[in-house]
Image (cartoon, rainbow, N blue to C red):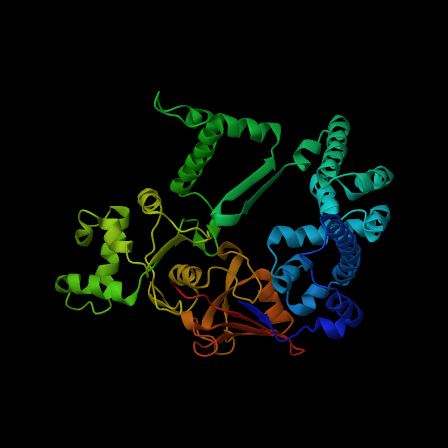
Length: 461
């Protein structure tokens, strides 16, 4: 949960608007359908006029670089945190605010209530891969079309502008194909990933050649569609790349799939009791953890799970399993498949998310420590930030110079921007201890001016 010491009172900031909204009569069930329809249309128009003011203020905030004062690298990230918005919606609002300023004709139509933010967003999405000045050349056309068009109509108009520009540029600039290459990979709801991009002829040909043998049907019983076979083939290519061992490091550790298992004290105690005879010196349940890992991957004995190994290991409701970087829970079937090819880290966490068992060392942040931080922090811990572990660095909460130890309790993952903010702009980052009102603890960042940001950690399971 993200929280800030900078409280907002809309009634104080915009008293006239707050009073006007409060004075609106409630919906009346007895009103005729025609009368209710007129009110809906009027409210829609007035909301769009209000959106024009919102975008103007947002653009002013963006132009002034106001996000940095709040501890955020971009206006989008600030808006996501303070507005509780998803990444796509926040980015669309900022892009629409910029478009309304660059193309005042469209901004004027928005101010009259003739179009909404969704119309501007349709234009920004369909023209995002071409220069802004090219879009500005078509301002009059878009301005004339906008009051009579749906967002989908404006999206088609923007795509037409994009297609014509790319066609003309391709014939006049031989380097354009290379400059226009792009690839976007974004996680959507329920852990699904959306892939979109444009490759050069050479790279596209290489990818097609690599996918072709993996896309073939596996036999007459293979009922997958062609798009499904291509998606599976791309996953196979990634598996091959991960197995080759030649990928560069990510976040201080080699590229890997990390399987995170939250296992309760009760479940581990039961496993430890069952394995107690194997090692009298093992009081922390390490043999049980090793046996869990062996059961998942099939590389260890896994005697505890004979017959129904996965159900025994992960069957109770207090345990959870997931891939770091994914919001989706992993099914037992997927777990077995992943366990064949991926590195599996079994992390035993307490209810607050603290790691009880995972390799750690001292001095400089080691591979084991970075791996432990990845499991514990799951990305930048700075309140409001959502950068993944691969884009983060190990930061000493009590600075290494003069006396901060490189121990796991004194380390935290932070992204490059927030690492700079802490050291160069003198923000302070500290842990919130577990206990009321934060039973699982969390993180607190304080600016030199006294602005405080907080984020409470989610329970481990």
